[in-house]
Length: 112
Length: 114
Image 1 (cartoon, each protein chain N blue to C red):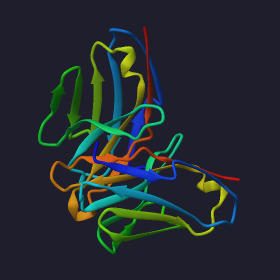
Image 2: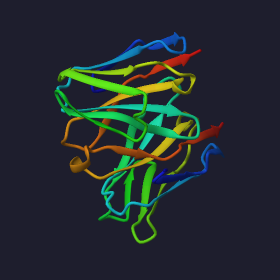
Image 3: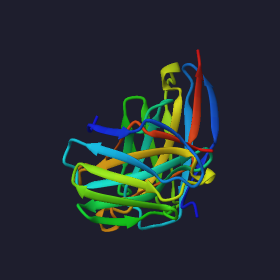
């Protein structure tokens, strides 16, 4: 357990509203990631960060933005939520030593 | 595009049997191949991982077999137990030059009947 928390754990919102998900880690890991999990697709990378203020896009980044102002926090924002963004979102961290990524408990987001 | 293909999508085995899940990858730059286990309502957790310079890695009842020339790797669960019932994901990574990003397979839902 790498001390990763995600908030909120569940959220229901309406199409067109902005949504921000938060990931907080206590292990001082350099790398942080946001994935979404959908049936039949496994986990797909949305965005990742390799340091404070250093971020890059993953394979499904359209409609999402991220920010990392502190090592411990990585925020994922849906600028205008759509029903296709209904999913379970996982945050992960990576220390750079064992190559293991540690995952948070997930946030279930429903966009009506 | 999916760079890691996983099969089967679901698998049902009897207690004590062998569970086998297969993955195939396309990008020869991948240099780390982990398997993650996920229980309902939880995040994935690393189960076992292998690098392409070895053909097999065993940890307890779990074994990864790796075939570099075929670009395939598989997870074998020996003496499967009901507690092994979970979703299993294979993945691949290219290291820190690419941000150590993981590319996942589609997942296999394993059910072990008592």
